[in-house]
Structures are given as structure tokens and as C-alpha cells.
Length: 200
Image (cartoon, rainbow, N blue to C red):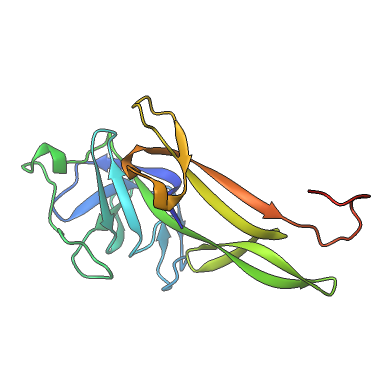
């Protein structure tokens, strides 16, 4: 499972209040969200977001999205209601500490969760393993013939931000020092007789 920022960043247009963020309207898709509400700037209510100005960041779950003003901006609330909701629903504003203020030098990105898993399908009468990706309620078939996937994690042991050793997950000493990954795939073909001799 991978969690990362996804899609293009959305620019903050003015200082946040204690109850909401104010961001640019890049696009509007009527009924574009799973609950039938409008998708604004690629966002839906209940999306998990990160707002950041490259000095500080905050993770939040969006509540209501309301488009107002001329030129329009989208007002994004962060209430305690919802699932999981926000532990601290009131933060920010002109009188708030600097670490809670996000103004027009900040951006919002949606945090996406992607799960990779295997399934089987029938190809030319034979069972073929398939690598899939689960993304926001949808399953996408990525590659046929993937029998196994292993991930090793590159750990920086000397502080130069370069991996010095790759380890399995249960052997990582310091997860904050992991700077890269290696992905190993075991692939097979559905066709026979591809080699004239056995391969080791």
C-alpha cells in the first residue's frame, strides 16, 4: 500500500480562517464525486488533503466545498464530523500562531491511497496471475503474468540522503532513514516453448 500526494497542486488564494481554507477554482465537474456532489479543482468532500507552504504542512479531511466570490474561490472546511473527521477542527486565521497560518504561498494536494494486489484471470484457457491497483474505489489491471512482487527498502545509514543498504520491511532499523525502494517482480509468459533450453 502506498500513500502519496496525487494530481496537481491547488493554490491557496488568501490566508486561511479558523474554519476553512480558500483555494483557487481550477475546474468544476457537476456530480463528479461519488456522493453526487460537484467535484471542484479535483476535490470532493471527505478527501484527505495536505496543505503545505514548503516550511510546514498539515493533513486534514475536507468537509464541505463551497464556491463563492468573483473571481471564484473554493472554501474548504475541516470539521470534526465525518469519517475519520478532524481531531482539531479549528486552526489558522490572522491571529493564530505562524505554524497554523497558510496563505497565498501555500498549496493543497489530495492524499491518495493505492493498494497493489494479485488476482487470477483466464487467458487462452490458462490461469494467468495479474497485478492490480486499487485506487479510490476502483480496481485497475496493471500487468498480466506477475506471479510475485517483493519490496526492499533503501536505508540511509550515514545521513547523506542516499541509500546505503536495502532491507526487507521487518529488518529496517530506522523507517525515518528510508529514502528509496526496490521493487522485484517475478514474471511469466502465457506462451510455451519460448526458450530452446531450460533456464536456471
